[in-house]
Image 1 (cartoon, one colour):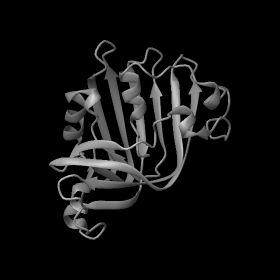
Image 2: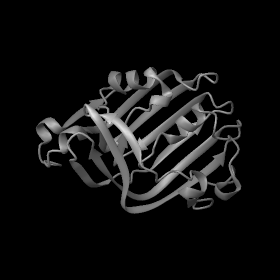
Image 3: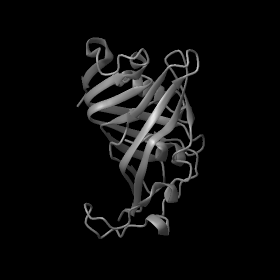
Image 4: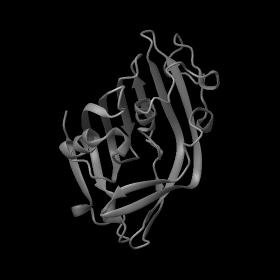
Amino acid sequence: MNRLARLGAVLVAGGTMALTASPAGAHPAAAAPGDDAGWVPIEELRPGYYDPIDISACGTTVTMTTGDVADIEGRETPLPDGGLLFEVRGDVTVDLTRHDTGQVIDELDVSGPYTEQVSADGTQIVGAYHAPSILFPYPELGPVDAAAFEAAGIPDLAYVEKGVVTFDLVIDPDTGEAVTEEADVDGRIIDLCTWFDGDRGQAHGHAYAYADHR
């Protein structure tokens, strides 16, 4: 997953994502899923993709900014049932800065590919985020999103080191918030709050939790 994975769910929840693929990233529905047609720079589909974002985590606010690597592509594919498949691939790193201490996690690789499938009416989103990825709850999705993280054992600032995490959300079209949400973890999840002390990748005994909720 990239630095703003799960962004599609938030855009749908806010009513700002059209379910018809834009011409720039349009991918013929009849084309093979693994082909290279239709991929465009991510900014053409999500203009604010590389913008900084503030995350409530680690007992403070953590700002995430794009690192030295930013080479992401996206693709939108209309589905036969009227839904939309959004795919992302490429390479990207991020920097994470704590507001309370100024500590930084520098050049974190979050280049894992991901997909988001949106129903025709925009009320259901299924997203699969592959390692290496960063995950955190979105306030725009309301308390159900945070509760899904807690139920699946996912920290508020999580790093998917191995495997994949899948979210299945149902959105209230009137409020834009998640009505129901389930998270399925099949891999190794690290609490990034434990990495700000400089022991990145060293203190595995307490730095990650393994979960498999299939």
